[in-house]
Length: 516
Image (cartoon, rainbow, N blue to C red; front, side):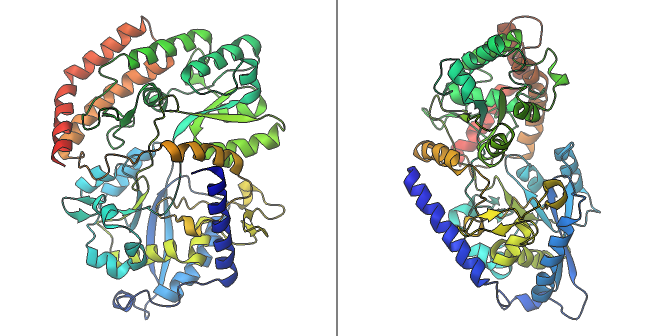
């Protein structure tokens, strides 16, 4: 898909959005005859609690938007929505604890197969199995917009547990955001490989002593996985560990491998990280890192490691304001090998709590928020005139005097977005987006493991032991901050994996894939 085609699609999207806004065509009454079976209009509105990840806002604006939303929900479904926030600090442990609690009064649960342990929570009985009749009756619009194949990918042992975010396009593949002026100093037109990145950091060290090349933290999971995806056509199984410990090489699909465990690529990665540590690419103790993003805007750091959407929606626009004239580039992991994978449709998904007292009504509420223009905009953007306003070109702008800290809302509705109802933000760098997506659309493959039932009680218990070993070694190897040689450290790491049964688990995963 070239830039011109993408531009036409965006223009059509904005046109449809403008028409929808002008006509304000909300759902006009019951979605289907079954609504009245569960909506008791003689009682006070039933509260449906939606759990999401993120710190609870304290500026009062989210409550105002939800109050507007609840007026609509009360009128149509005699329901109110309440948001339960699981803060970012130690979010996964707290998330799992809350979902397993018998006292948790929750109905809708934002979840994910790759970063929020959807399958383990299904196995633990925390999510309600959803029959097709139930979905057809109480989540009817969404149900018809999910293909049979996509529903299959949301099943475990024949039952549907997840409602996929299948109508939203996003690119959250990671890489390095860098300064083009420094790349030019290094003799580079752009950064297109880890070798280029090495040259870039060498130039920063030599010519910009006022900068920390990359003020990284202790976590090295994304960096190690990114290097391996760049060094080969390795595609990790995202459901199994945050490190992508197992996967397959797309030049030989169907065989479960781990470059962490065998091969030279991970040794090469360890050598490069040791070199970068000696060079001073990061602090002598990565645990003492500062606010790298803010340092980048101030000219005190030369790179940010993040994903595509962060680059064009936030970093590039912010840099244009903070340091006008400084152009940025994005080196995405996998570029060297042309290795990029589309997100799974269950990277974001909605589930219904197995302890919900009103699961049918919860589905009705979700279906309305996901598909009704007015409800969707309140949930995603807030109140028109306060959080956003529509420009003549159909894009969204911030009202005059808007202050992010004082005026923003936080609902973190990442489990039911739809391209058709999204409003393009005028502040985003769409040129940067077109340039990247032009490459992505030509190269990206479909995630190959959707629907493969890797998550089983036995596998999950064994994988936790493996992940503990990764937790110990990857921060050391990725920072180069350890005694001894990279070769010896990788050998030690692999020996620990072998003792923990890594080869046995790999064989088990292979049998699951073969039988799927």
